[in-house]
Image (cartoon, one colour):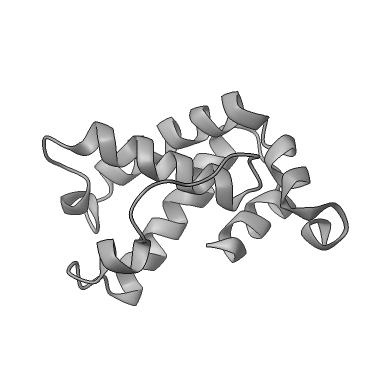
Length: 115
């Protein structure tokens, strides 16, 4: 409901803007790299660049006043064969990361729905 009345920029600001989103992405990656179900997707020498690009994508999705300049997600994910189970594990980490930066249940739900 908040996204409908305030737009996603209200969501982005409620998460703490750029600083809050960066902190969230740090918490998210702590969870992703520890989760046995999906950590194999979050290893390798290019992880810093992937994290930065994904952070930008998430910030834009949550309403940041910037433009996402990374590769299209459908192209990135097309070769990864991500199952529903793995995507659910990713979303669980999103929720954990958001709660870890103090997001309330409504904001967590709104963020997950946007993804």
